[in-house]
Image 1 (tube, rainbow, N blue to C red):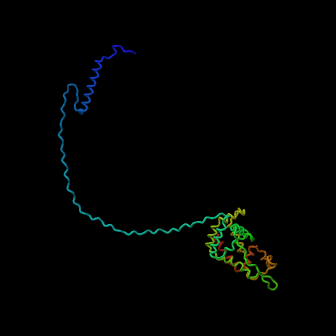
Image 2: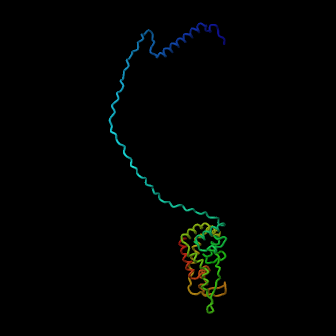
Image 3: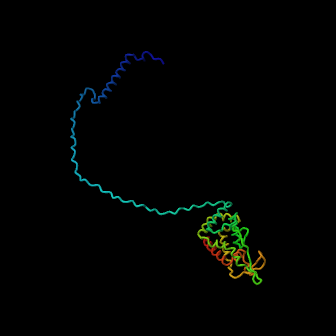
Length: 289
């Protein structure tokens, strides 16, 4: 839209208005910068500001310091430190890791040798599958049988001998000595050491026993049964008469011949060795309970 001439503002009017606004703005700034002491209102008189004389405050006079007596510092008493005696704590024994059952022969040989405490028992030990054969042997003993081929110990090197007296055949008392080393080994075992070794080997014994397929009993129970069988064997003091030839010898006394083979072995050891073995078995039985 175009503007008419009447709508336009002449340059003179525009200049006059602008200058007036500028002058008023300058006066306002000067008045404010002067602190606003003057108030302009029509023809009223301007009051002169009252001048108030400053109040002089005297400097404070320092007070005299209080006299104090010097108090000597207390002497420190030096007390000699007494060392605290801590209770001794037993070291935790290191548990030797068990080998795998298939690799346990060396470990078991070392354990048995340590328990023997210097007795030459190692030559009597079989070389292979010692734990498995021992478990099978004990399982058979508990049933009154002798698994000779599964014995963990080698058979005595001396031969079984007999004596002929008045046309009768008796066990030669010298044959009892074939079992001296075995009986002495069991009799000399330290109960605590034996129990400790048995406990350490329990996992291996249990694993080998589980291979036999039992589910209603443990190897420890089987060991207890085997000990009871051996303890029930009679001790014969008098000469024992035999019937037969060589390895087929039988006891003439039907009561002895009816005994389980495990108990017949105790009789062939002789009364002295039988007592040693029974004493050792009773001690072992207490450790297993």
